[in-house]
Image (cartoon, rainbow, N blue to C red; front, side):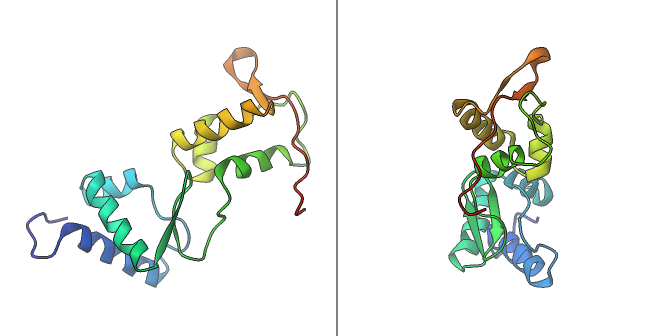
Length: 148
């Protein structure tokens, strides 16, 4: 992104993202802030201002621990609920290995920090724990969701 422009760099980024959303190139989750920083060659504050401008216009919304989404799309549940749903799968049993942090980051498109927070909550509930070989295991299965 050119830095010396009559229009603020953050506005150029927000306009580029708006166009991608309108054209369907971004239909649900936006790239992470770190990815946007790399793509546009700017700092976190510039990306943050661009995202806040889009949020103010009602184009996107943020979900704590999950990132930014096109308004009105996506699964807005907290990450810990989405990860806990993995334990509700038909083929999951106590003692099974639990996915790694990297696998969860990839699957849900979130940061390692967000995944670690969800894992800590699940460990606190006694659902998963560190097993042999420094690999997490399923220790208990969650109750079925009330809306199931």
